Image (cartoon, rainbow, N blue to C red; front, side):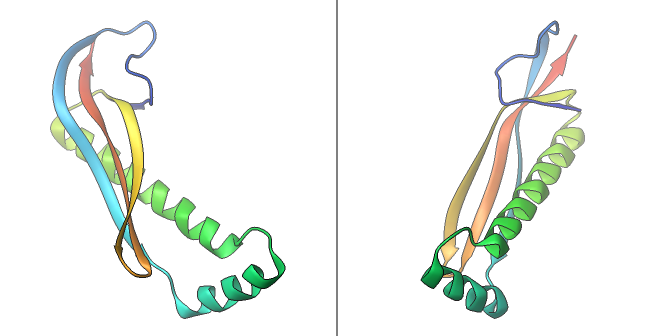
Length: 104
């Protein structure tokens, strides 16, 4: 499966647009991470616990996007975008979406 943020794949032709492929996950903070993040907020710097949480959430959303594209019978997903939205206080959704296509 080819995954791309561009609207084309070099040296390949899009022969069919199948539709939108998507994958998402909702993640919540936890009290342990919040405690250490609060300490980091006092002294400044990267809050590594949240960085790791977000990175894992992005990877999971991308995996689910790829699974959805496979279910649709796609060869590739082009124009992939990622977005984040607050679901409730302390919880956010990461959504990955793009156009599932067939290639020649």
